[in-house]
Length: 380
View 1 (spheres, one colour):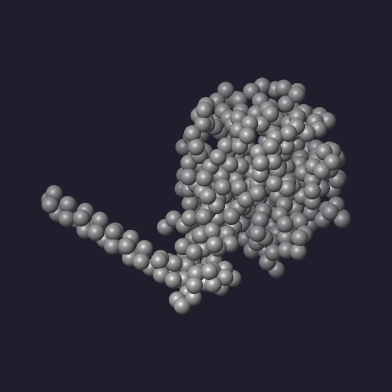
View 2 (tube, rainbow, N blue to C red; view 1 turned 135 degrees about the horizontal axis):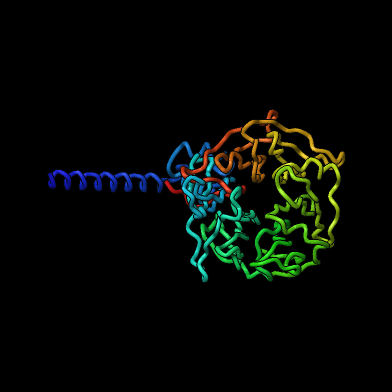
């Protein structure tokens, strides 16, 4: 029996090695026989990556190299499902070309170790937030809660898809949680929130972090402390950050931050009245910028018309009900709904909006989504 088992193992190892060597041989073939690689790069870069992926191993390797323009993927912050009761945080990317989830490399060790608290007896009906952003083509994990209800991150965590590496950002002037956070022009803005306990100074502080050079500076303060009630998404749109102070269907207060003049403004009445769920903005073809919101109660995706100060309906779908977080990029709006059990993608540039659902990795619930360039190295 043992001889038979050993023979089977040797045969399996032999076949695995044979497949590996065969794959390596195919992947080292010229991209386009008879043409030098730099000319082949120019020719193939004009094609959609889904076409190249279906043809050959060499072309699949090429579309995940630095020589090919990176396509966009969905990046998610996930937690262990509610049934498992765990507080583990996971990071995955869904590659639409491969049509599968790829786990990001683990973040680097820190001192003190990173331990994120997602559930607490004082908050039975909700998970504690993990605040993250997409900034200059990178994923930034900015704020979370640790045991003892204190900030879990003293320095932001940054993942670069091109190098597949994590790094720590600079220390912010005041580590915080439950803050307003947004990005505009390659900079991160953090406002309000609290540290280990409530502090009026932290609640009225605004910080600007330039991701390119890791410079952190204090900006003009908030006029009040309304941005310290929970984690708030500040949406970057037309040179300003737009935000409301609470989630859900509760009565909201709006605020607009002009980053160029460091001045806070009131939100237009029509925008505030229709802000009934998560929101996101993206650049469109021709340089226009559009802002979208999902009415989480009705499952309606709407687009904001600044001239009319009104939200116009884009599409209604049952899978958008209960929307909790959203992102936008590349002509797609991506929404987390169903208590984290669904990632819904809406193609908003199609003549008739198209909708499809991506299930999160088994046993995990989506907490947040972002649209970023795909990771650089293909994993089969």
